[in-house]
Image (cartoon, rainbow, N blue to C red; front, side, top):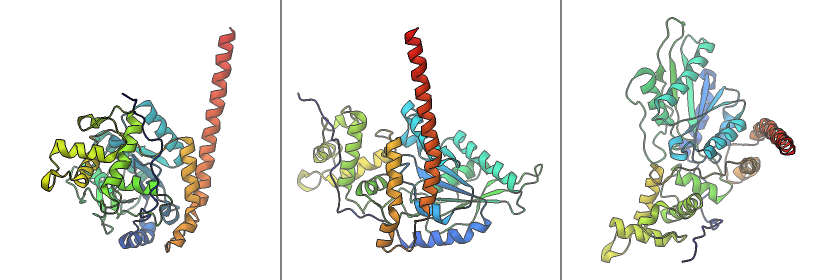
Length: 370
């Protein structure tokens, strides 16, 4: 039997839509900008599974000048705490310097305590008579409301205040502040309040693969891109991750053919239409949901390497003209300055790595000579 070889690249999908920038995204962003004078801290949520793609340059332009905490949500769905995962997190931290970066699972009490401690420390330094107000922002369905509910439960031991769901667009308006930290009489500080906001999509996605990544993690509605196409893209990543040793062995042998896999799923799970015809759309949606829930492996879809990061930044630098061509009222040109700053910190990090590698090589050479 011939050895299975995963696809090296995914077929181009030029006909896919490149935006999901809706009316309530624009109005929500405009409202956020008017609130900044009363906001002490911005928490920007990004999806751990797409750490580069779930970054929205509009926030760099609209919410600049405010202290920011970047939180990568859903870590449990993208990491198994492998050395490679920790390496990716180190790269991401250096990318965001000097902003603080955290990687969280909202079901982890330990993770929520770390976020609460950061919020408390920031509030104590502000000494506001009305309490500290934190704005939580991010792309659609990255886990903002789930984070709010988890922080509320951990901080003040109360039931959830924000509605959550599997599809984007559950939160359409900016909510009033929800208390996550009680007033501290000894320190003389008021409470800490978290303000939930609607997810805001990017006006234009520069490449179709990025759109598929965001659709796969649930940042756009499942009706925007055909489920079979999304499931095929997931199969491509699963085969790359597993090298042929896949979770789908119960349905078919290792394959690059999505129809073969989906027909196998239909037969085993009973997803059949009239006359026993396989319902491949239903099977594709079932697989996608299983992956989103963490049942089919934990991995990232983005290339979180030095080269992958540089490629992402290059795409964002070219985003301004494309967003204007699509009719967006938001100019993302100012983000280029922010990217230059990020690359400055990241360049220092790379230089340190190179120097460290050279030092290690010299020590190894001396040891071999001795």
